Image 1 (cartoon, rainbow over the protein chains, first blue to last red):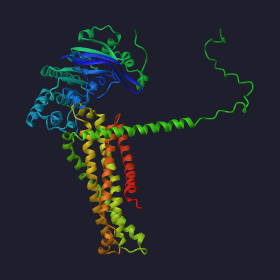
Image 2 (image 1 turned 180 degrees about the vertical axis):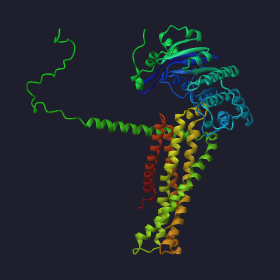
Image 3 (image 1 turned 90 degrees about the vertical axis):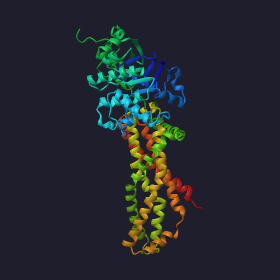
Image 4 (image 1 turned 30 degrees about the vertical axis):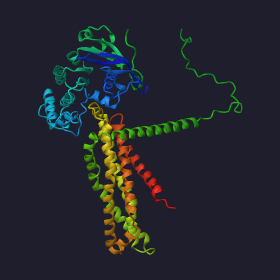
Length: 264
Length: 293
């Protein structure tokens, strides 16, 4: 289980998370929605220790992440697959080397086992046989799929997806959604998906949580979110511009975007 | 009610002037205050400078700790030694070749009629081995090696590749920094040694072909005040230059924030700070190892 407990995080004067609390149960796919700049990515970066909270904590299976020493954090990271927004593939390595990257250091895997895992992970994302290609030769959607394969290859317990469908056309987005569902079925992983694409959220999420002004505004199943009467949630899922603009206007660099308080 | 005053709105008419101006002795005109803003500026810059040094210290401490992770940096070391050492040879040898020629001609121009011609060999040898070989090579490599590292690591930072390394359970310092700094520290003296040899050969060629000096005279001058300390001093310096340039490039590269502008800034600052570090270290080694009496 991943538990965010009263998480606070600020960057200079800009307060991003202000009491973010959320529990992700074992085996479920939790989708976190919210406007651009609302702190969704910041929240999941705490899960793998890429950021340290100013207050509060994130616990994975009862381990408080920011209190772990380096070896324990490394062991935790080895159980978490992270899919980055723009794939974050290593430019100088081939697709195969990228996917094998997290496996090469493991003493328990022979070179042939690594190759098998790489081939299997690439097959799972429908990119079999692309091991020798370079990331620069791939389309945006293919790069994201390689990023997904790289995360899958380590056979994680948890998967974190940072805006996996951003910048993709609707068909490619649907393919990525399908791959996320397939990954969950194949590996039985617990997942957190960060997105502002509502179609994707409804397709992959067991539960959906809305992040607003640094904290969770509402958590519920897709049906509960669809039926929400909260004006902020409704404004977001219906894409009303006024609701989106004031969401990003909490001080700091975005302050000039503030146009007013939400309607009661 | 045209013309009636509107309560609560500011009047557009100018405020009435004071009846009597205040006397300048009782109320001297307020002086503009320059001191506090200047002090604040100095304070901010000092704090930023000290903060950067603190971060550099922590960064080096992390690098020392990461030395234990041999499995991570070991397989990257050879690749970095080739990139920093072998790939830098052409530019280093090019610079050294022309420096050797100029030194020979300059020595001849300076000494003609004053001291024996064979001292051309002395000056070429001493200067190339102890000063210009290491320093000119380091300044060239500050641009080539340091800027490349800052741009490469900065781009990795802004495209989240460094974060990806961490999530794949790698220590980025062990994977990215340690092999680069070690390779720089090891390979800079090697490159400089080749540069010294090249400069001596071109200096010798210039002396025997362009100046009225024989090969034997040049060699006599070269050996006159020669000691092994000459090249040892040059190579020790070079090693410290390699360490400084690669450390600065990695530190500023991994510290990039923002996008392309951040990468550009880090690259530019790496070249400037590396050049400054080379000159400061050059003076440090001179004070430490050359001071006599």
